[in-house]
Length: 194
Image (cartoon, rainbow, N blue to C red; front, side, top):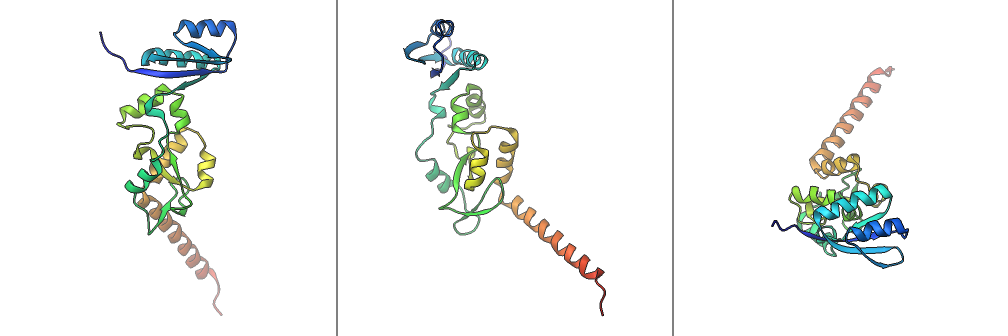
């Protein structure tokens, strides 16, 4: 028999007789009001997740993989080099921000990974040790971090992965400067000299 990893799960937000029967039939125990919990094999948890999505029920996987650690900020600063001195570049907008005011953002947010076994498998396949792996962390200014929120859209994910490369931001700034100088030179050549 093949051993399958066991995953603790919570289900919240339903108390109808139909859903209660369906959830208890899937192996969950009723713990009160609108809360159910169980420890299921990962394949059973994936089926339960699909059922909860269809029925609009909150599903949470409490896998060790998807738990926010308390030391992820410290690990980010130990493994990531600042741009200059104690200044980092926001991966989303390119602003320079000090180490004191930056937020360390999870590219794949903890809340999204906690609620999705699919995302947990995706990150595990990429070799991430957990959602707090340094490869899943980027420097972000507070404004961009608020705008992104718990989004897992390809736009934000791609922007973060590209934006953590400092040389690309420097290339962008150099191109903007070159365009500005070229524009000034062009305007200056158009002006009549007396």
